[in-house]
Image (cartoon, rainbow, N blue to C red; front, side, top):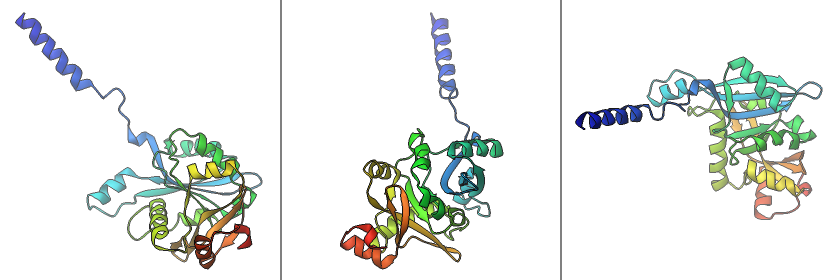
Length: 240
């Protein structure tokens, strides 16, 4: 009886030590996307800029090591967003993961032609955060991700936090729109105001806004017009 009890105890301990290993996720297999920029490419194609987290660099910075990059930017020419992800996989040998995506930035030229078809991929992606902020850049979005914040944050995290802070304390920045809100707004076509991001020298600005009619960008409003819209909401296309 004692031998059986000892054997049962040993089997229990062994099984407990193995629990959790069978579905262990190796983070090196995944490319954790923090931000995405989508620009107009040649003919009907697109250019996608991925800002990808480098776990080793983030850990080193958190431990006070410094010196290492916490993100890397990879640019891909593609037919559509799904094709871009396939090309990214072939370049990095890592599976794109969107569970940490902070911002989606559409370039100015591409936005004039419409953003709805490019949003479909994100709305169908099961790992996508519907709280991801959506912006339109002045010029190409690729330039936005070249700016490295001095506080050490990723460009994507910096833009996201800047929108949240300035929205609270500045009238010149309209309320940002996230992916879930944009999906609901596009279901009932009307004028809407998206966040604007501009590269000015080696800095980023989110003042003003981008006016979108149905799903097409039609013009900018500056910081003064943004204040007027925030205080006295009127039809957006009268402001541009």
